[in-house]
Length: 289
Image 1 (cartoon, rainbow, N blue to C red):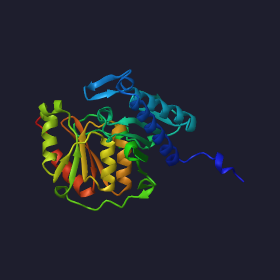
Image 2 (cartoon, one colour; image 1 turned 90 degrees about the horizontal axis):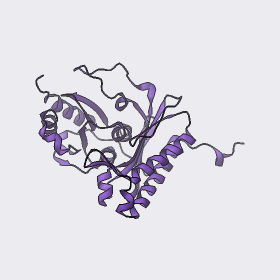
Image 3 (cartoon, rainbow, N blue to C red; image 1 turned 45 degrees about the vertical axis):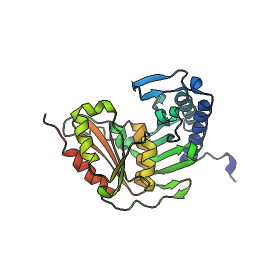
Image 4 (tube, helix red, strand yellow; image 1 turned 120 degrees about the vertical axis):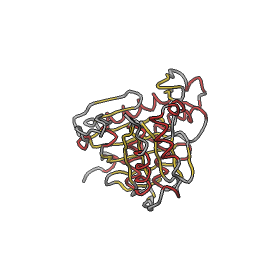
């Protein structure tokens, strides 16, 4: 008889374990104070987009554990960790999503993880404008997982994996018009001066009942899946900020879309009708060539 204690964990079990460990590691570094947190800090795209020692340590933990547990799989990390495996599966890591919140003492941050099927990528896909979008954002999400340590909330869901919060089923998202919903979103102030981003964002932002801008895409998307937040939209979302939540939203019966407008990819998630309405509004904001 097989020794169950030595059997390999499932993907869901592995993801849950690593997320809790990474979240605890990030919190322990933050508890040492700002000097420890900002050791090795580097700015990425702007003053609100940076990595700390906690981001780097948590990603290293994810990477080493995944290499040991799933040596055939590929790995892509936000902070640069990477491995090309021999299987058709890729683990996408976001060690700390909502880093600005994390360093400010807010609880609204998380560690997130997605497992995608690489063979589901449409490598020849083109937008109507002729550009090639990031194919990974359109991959099949086998498993999405988001863990918010300071609220002890773990969301999971994906292809064949039911949507759950702390192991309890999330009820299927009910159909809803966008005008009756709250919307989570984000746009960097610098983009507001650029019509190609500002015009579509405003068109979409005029539709919901109210707006929320809370600083962590994965936390937002997990809450869309459970119905706490109605719908979500943002442009130029990296795969590690999109895929974990995408898997959970779709497992909860919601819809997702990537809409290409004015050279930018807009990511939308929520109940199917609301996603359709937001996508239509974004498309009306196409600027003359």
